[in-house]
Structures are given as structure tokens and as C-alpha cells.
Length: 237
Image (spheres, helix red, strand yellow):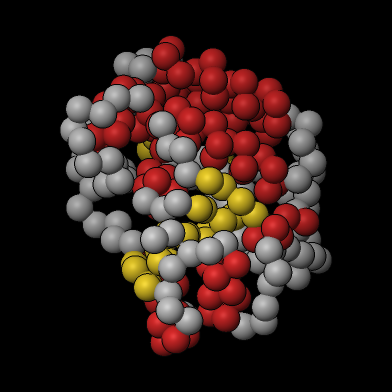
């Protein structure tokens, strides 16, 4: 049995994104898809004493209505310095900030002159997977032959990857034709994002939908206890 998941790349994604990665044998970054503005591709949220703060990578999008995610370029390389400054300012007092700050800052330093959004997202995803102990194989949709049709393309990617199980995010229920998976001999499963436990956060109002960096800096070696894909409560980073 081989389980596959396919998602567009996100910038410093939330914990649920990494749960999906950890629940499959191969995770395919679906960056041949059209770039969508005001989405998670180039931005995410962190917690501050004054509420949530969006960190957004400035990208070239004006007039580029049909550009793909992997074609999207960064337009101002000062973003890396500014983002790290905001993270350091708001998380320096978190219990485990000093344990992981050097690793995250290193990725920002490596990405400050990177031209393409997809590469930036990939580097952060790989580093965070390594921090969490997630060893799932990560590939790109461009590594495979792509067919036409929304569901047909997903089915084709899973088959080309040698998969017989597909784990999908719940938002895809709006367009996926489930019968096409079953006709191809692929079992379709849906990710459930409900029921996440709360953890210690530097705010009075708990927020689940923020970057996983919030969980890592606040819970450190116990971060896995607050994720669904890790079954053993005594797992450590």
C-alpha cells in the first residue's frame, strides 16, 4: 500500500498541512496550478500580543492572471529580513524559541535572494519537516506527466507515483469526482482538521490557523503531541 497526498505549496504552513505530509508515503507539491491571490501560497499568520499578523511575500501578480505557482516571482528581497524581524520580535519570549530560531533564520538567509516563490515554500516545508521528524518523500507535480481535468489529473498523479490511496484535503470535496478514483482502483480518504487540542500560546484567545512555527516555538519538543499524525504521546522532536 502506498498513500499519496497532493497539495499546492504554502508559505510556512499551519500544523494541519504537516499532518497531511506525515500521513502519506509521498507528498506531491502541486505547483503547476494557477497562482491564486490573497491565498496561502505567499502568506501566513503568526500570533502577536496585538492579535494576528500576516506575513506576506511580495510577488509579481499584476496582470498575470494565469501564471502558475511555480512561475510566480518575488519582487522585493527585503521580505526575508522583515519577516524574520517580526518572528523574532513576537516569539523571542516563547519557551523554545532559542532551541529552533537558528534553524529558521538560516532558511530565511538562504531564501533572501531566491527568485521563485515555490522554491522558498519548498525550503521552509523541508526544514520544518526535518524539525518535526517527518521523513515523507516530497516531489513536484512537474516530475510527472499531467493529464487534463481536475480529478483526472489527480488520479493520474497518484497512479504515476505508484499510489493506491489518496489523502485529500476537505476543500477538494467541492470539485473531486470520487468515482474516478474508485474506477482507477485508488482508495480516497479525506483529511479531518477538527479536534486539534490547544497548547500554550502567547495570546489570550487561542488560534489554530496560524503557521506551525507558533507550535514549534511554544511547545518545542512536545509539538508532536498537538498534531494528529503522531500517535505516541511520548514522541519527541
